[in-house]
Length: 62
Image (cartoon, rainbow, N blue to C red; front, side):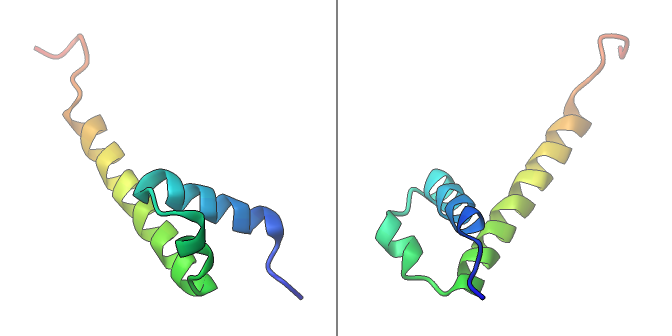
């Protein structure tokens, strides 16, 4: 059984978008390494999003 092609495309697009790595670099990675980088980027985005939400004030806050 092979890794679903849709998931592979998602990982490649995700890493290329965030890290600007070329297709060959990403495809030469082990599957687990690609997944790990995707997890790390997602964690960074979650932290940034939660911090920006906490720092936003409502128009009712004075």
